Image (cartoon, rainbow, N blue to C red; front, side):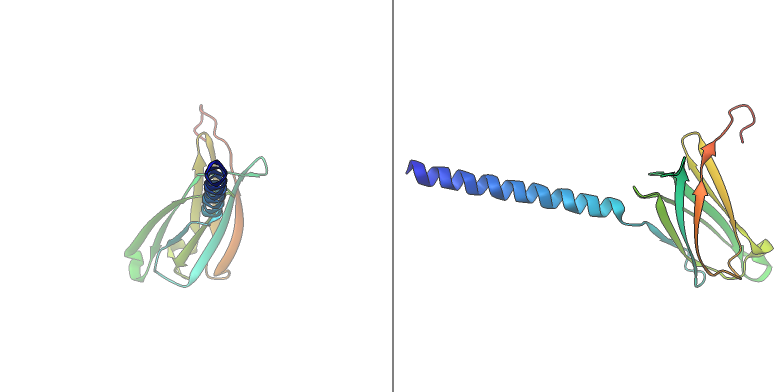
Length: 140
């Protein structure tokens, strides 16, 4: 009876450890999943990696304002946060935009950076945005 109780305890302990390992693996996989925001306005996309001092920045907010269509009457404001690898993806960007460029702005705490993108010659783009400390005196 005591031996069967010990065997049952060992099995339950092993099962609990396996469940904890699987949960940790799932959490890790979810943390590395690249967030994707779809503007549903075109076929272009941008894969961005946000860094500071050469290291990926987690939970940096990246936003872009898109004006497109006849007379630039259509407008989109998209925003997403980076994953643990500093990555985020914007899809559904129109190939033709007002003023022909888009400005992606990334921010985290007192760090900021921008990247200007013209979707017409490079519809599928990959780029890094390096964040630098914003001076509190000038705001830049």
